[in-house]
Image (cartoon, rainbow, N blue to C red; front, top):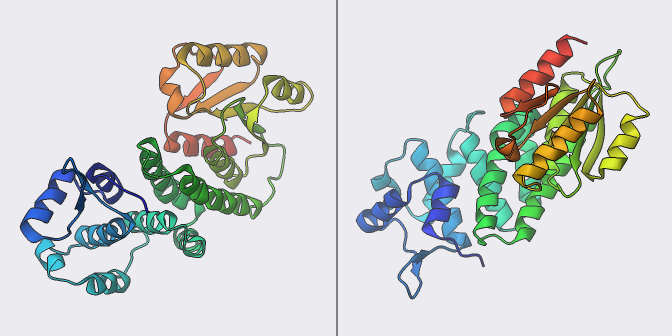
Length: 295
């Protein structure tokens, strides 16, 4: 059984900690356990209940009404609510609840339903990324063991690969985009998502994957065509080594355009002329669309 702090609940449910405390004191909406230090702690069942309360609250239910409802009535209200296609917060809540419980069947069904309702691109941008960000916050605070993050990530990874395989093979002589992450960078979902975005716009791609040795990358680039080199970097480099790596890549392949995204881009101090930073997912989507127009 996991334990969550009130800050964890805030991050997961989207309700401020001071609001949660007020609901507890005024409406007795929930009764958290207490540590010896008197700090509130919440378990898996508390989280699931508060996710449902949060959903109803964000869909117009008053707190006083929620406080008067039983857990069964709250559950019924959630399942009876007409869900709009743009109700991304509910989808995130559903994925969190299934992941915390290691409920593979439920998570599979939720992800499939989301992809069918809003499409894979919107699912990645508006549901999968926010979900992984929240789960990541718990992992950083040691409140979710890595197994739970890996459990959810594996299923998302599989769904993105299946969606990409279902796309039509790019036709014509388009500009080829090579995708990789450097040695030591193991986060694959952002790379898979980028590959999906590029392919969906009919851009030819070469997917090399994660944790690629520089010599291996060069071996391919020296023998096969690639107009763009794309990488996503999250945590692997310190500031100076990141600049050194990108400057070397740009210098070794001056005729190719280097594209970089990920949290580590905020640390880039040197910007070679053939290097472009994609600061946001929208930047990446715009690049995919514009590149498709020029092929």
